[in-house]
Length: 305
Image (cartoon, rainbow, N blue to C red; front, side, top):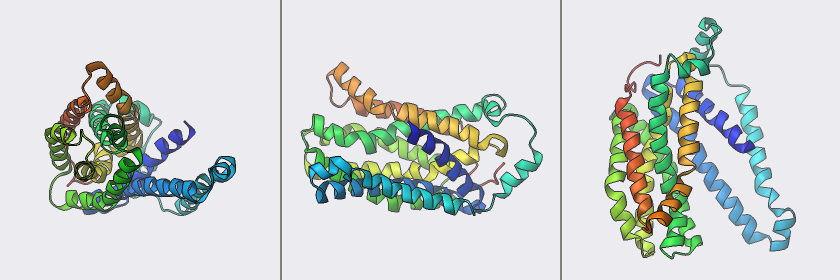
């Protein structure tokens, strides 16, 4: 819970800063580096856990060895705090400090800019569900319902995540120069909705080659919103309540809807008796995300408000 509160406040702040301080034609790529950091953090955490497990005996690991990955993370956190103390404020924030009155940004997000908050929430809900099914739930599904060894499924997932580190900034750059952000992400969601049932059907027997292919295809598609969504959220809201509106939409969509996705997927399988039920949930939430994107005004080629 403590880590969740920390990340919930810091991630959207980091994205806002990255996008506000970028040139207008580099906002997508600049914002994408926040998710590159998240993916790298997942990979480093996975690697440290594997190292601790492989190099320490069980007793040492349980006595004190489990603390080592956390201590390393604390060192990285301290370095981040030291670096952030010397960063200049963005021009948008400076102007906001001069112009804003006593109105609450959180209140504005639910009143004057309520439409943007709802749009962001719809998109974040679809994004969160698709992200969690693809990167968090699928390895467990392969183990529980397709009979694959969990370690094997996790290694495939780790390799797919490593590929995403490369693809995420490419997606952000592409949205800066070629295809508007909402259209690019809608195409990615539509592709996942169209192919997810055949892909789940293909891996239902736990075949390794099929599982590698499916996880890499889905990871490549989810890399698009991972690279493009940060700038889209920042561009959606005006400066007066940008961080508050973004945080509300993003954290409810990713935290509540996305975070509950594995539980909902498991419940759907138990209720229907159909192991492919998570694919239906992915389709439904991908459509929700597309609706949110279609309702938004795309500002990927306009100055920030």
